[in-house]
Structures are given as structure tokens and as C-alpha cells.
Image (cartoon, one colour):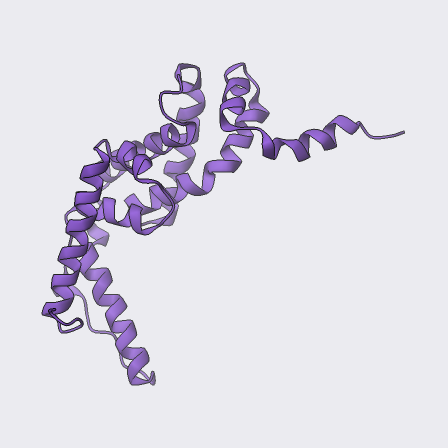
Length: 200
């Protein structure tokens, strides 16, 4: 007996279905349509949560929570923003709540004065210098204020458009750009001070 030809067709054609069409189907109770939305956006949602929380397990939990919330609120989604932007905003808000409620995030962020120099081992001088530079940049980024750091890390990921980041953070695109510029200025100033960059 032949298999149902519509099943293969649906699996192939789902790639050409837009988020908007999937949302409409999901709002009518089609769970498989919502599953497709999850598959499309789970990577972006997880990486946004990870940028906020810096801990993979916490980010995974927040991403799952975000999809549960999105499903429960889907009927109220009116399409003022794209589904992806709406979903990322939910994920970011969940991550911020998690960050505020769990002091673990702050305990993981050691002050720059507490960080020990990189062990030399047998690495060549240039490799050691690059590892030290990467470590220094990480510590400088950690030393930024959370608002500036969040904007900078989201932009540096090259995963999100400025409008998505603005929606996630609840600020204007201009403010996102200012925060990123401020982050870059502070990082450069620190690297100049530490002798990694020329002051020019």
C-alpha cells in the first residue's frame, strides 16, 4: 500500500511557509505549525538568553520558558512586530527576570582584580599573548555596565537586527547604537591603557 503523498509534500513545502502563515495556523490550534516556529527560532532564542545569562543551562531553561509563554499568549499576538521580534522580546524579558532573581549570575562575574594571569605552559609567546589578549577583552567586557554590555554582546553576535535588539531591550535603535558605541569606546580605552593598542 502506498504511503500518503500529502505527508511528503507538506514536509518539503513547510520551508516556503512564512512565519505569519504558521502563526495564523497555530492561533487556530495547529500545534504542528507552532512546532515549526519553534524549530525555526529556537537557536536565536537560546543565543539571546545565553547573551543575557552567560550560563548554557540557565539559557536553555529560559528558552524553553519563552516558548511555553509564547504558546500561551499566541492568541493575543496581533503582529505589530514580527513573530521573531515578539518571541525574542519574551525570551529577553524572561532572561532579565531570571538574572534579577538569581544572584548566581552576579557571583559568576569575577572582578578584574580577582582574575589570575594566564599560565604560560609550553605555548609559544605569540599564542600566549593572544590568549592573554582574549582573556583581557573578556574581563573588560565583564566590567561594562549590564545595559551597555547586553547591547554590545547582542550586536557582536551578528544574530539580530538593531530593531530586534531594540525591542528585546525596550529601547530605541538609536539608544542601542549609542550603547554599542560606548562599549567599544570603553573597551578600546582599556586596551590602550593596558598597552594592547596604540593610543592613536
